[in-house]
Length: 622
Image (cartoon, rainbow, N blue to C red):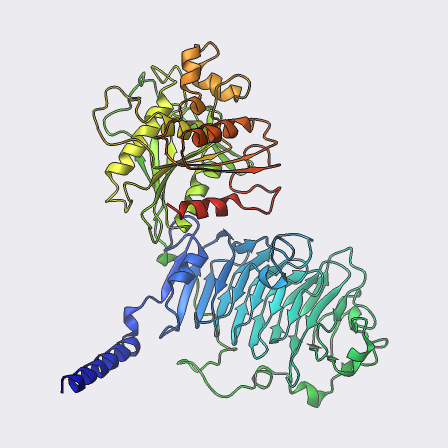
């Protein structure tokens, strides 16, 4: 009897759960926003995708604010019915730089964006692969069915768009597409309507791989083909597979279109199996006199079969407004009201006056050059808080570099914080005081005082900020690396003698990127040393701030990155610190690159190896 009751109860609960899954669509989120300026729900597109409900009960719309989103994104197959709406096509840019042959990447994993969720729609967005002329480098890989791209741009070189999915139907409406070789390729049934298509080299526009038995492959309706000035011979297409189908109808073709129009990819057998055709194209390149004999010219009755309902084998299934998937108008104008000012919060580092201060007037100033914001004359320190959408409890205090004369505040600060947010880490950018006798009573102690106060502040507010008080790291670049390594080795030294707060200032981990470590004259960065302790420092001062000499068994675990050809801060700085850690049984991981120089920030362009990925793996082992 109990057993039967239990079975009934389980069935009842199962029924209730199913009902809840299908009957209450309002309980789920259907509007998402992404903005690089912090005014959206997320800073990164992939984070928004990851937060979306799979197989939603109603269409999901992601509004993407103007900005350059330097990320590789993927919309999985179970994320159906998703719409991406950009603010403007020229300024909402998704870009990445992978390419075939980069590490283990192939053509099919080199994409900037991969879209697999059916009934996807994108409007007013640029998809770009900026790897350059390095071979196959896909901007868009789309294997979703009933996918629509309207007023979008696709920028790349070889293999710009992979229209994949043997049974997929796709529409590119009023788009701009550019590339070099086979830059529109794949097996999908894809219609390009009112598009501008630019060939950048003497090569081939299309490389269809239409599956056997399919009636349609690539269809170009009312498109305009343009080219770079250096192009002298451009083919409409060649067959990637033997049954390729490609048709150009009412398109404007430039003079540089090859007279034969089509190429058999060095295989005459392909001429018997492909279907390449044209109808009433215009322009100097539309002359059919010398077209390949195996290509076709459609007649009026044949061209009637090239309308969207027929191409897509349309069976009536419309939305609530009576539209089919391929003829819906614009969803709606970009909704700016959804974005609110959620910019990172900058707070004073000290509540009751800055210690070790002369009280001189603030002369802080900032300049922007070469895409770097440089802040000078810092006398009032602050902490800028970057909170992730999904905090994991870890925290990193970031100290930008600049030789103790300026702070490279965005390149080695705020941009790094945004990347940390993407990993779920709460990030804090420290605008520490720059040593200056006019501002500081003892200029040598000011940066360390600020670093200790930052650790103290984060640890004491850990609960409020969603931080684990035992997972607080300090990170520094160049001279900021000296600040960080000083904090990691001098936590028992009370830099501010008048501060009675007993909160621990020991960081739990240290992240040191091309750091100034030593003030030993044979390997130091003289500008940093002279700015902090002057040109006539005592041996005691020099040793005190030579942090490789201050490592003990209690020094926190450390992660170091540097290039062997660093001409500003000799690599011996990292090597000596690492050796000191090993000597004292302090866990340490070091990554040395042969080249990269100094100040490469988050991207050492001389190597395919990504030190940030190495760091992320290291952090995940905490």
